[in-house]
Image 1 (cartoon, rainbow, N blue to C red):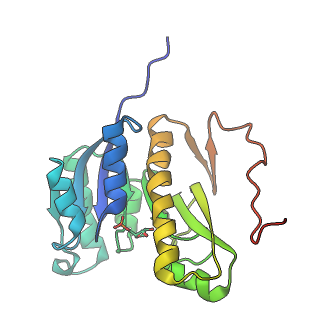
Image 2: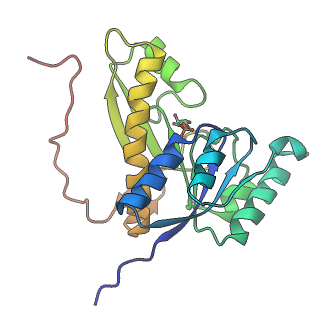
Length: 223
Ligand code: GRF
């Protein structure tokens, strides 16, 4: 008899608006994702995402990085808070702090992040502006497992977003954001279903072995 995997226990790290957090909350509410958000942590007390969490009855707290002498001390505080809620998977959703080995070792292979570009292109800050300035025809967003590098870990899901002739940073960022809200819940669902296996740089996804190449995109279009 096959027993369905239990809901995944999430800890979500934010610094800002928390629209990705909202997408995860909505996916759980819609039944698209079996997860239990045990805790939301922001490093900024003013982060809008804290209010979103509280509105949904999710425990939410601020751990202000400025109070700590260094990155490792801050990360020890994160680990303690996350472990106290028995968090299994850490989801960084607009969390603007680099994680030290303290966090990465405590949750190795169990920290996801999202980046508004097609990794490994345009890592770091201002990824949307970088893609525009480079003249790329496509950019997008990437959910990956966090490692010591910057936006460098094994890739779980990507969404491709074409860059249009009239795009400015705000317009392009909005279309990328909309895709983020689709792929982050998907990546977490694949984890919850125990389909993800990390093999070095490669993430294998059980049940998705026979994909065909029907999704090829050309920009501008061929016709
Ligand atoms: C997203 O663009 C994400 O890719 C980046 O930070 C932003 C967070 O947005 N890491 P929000 O706070 O979820 O609205």
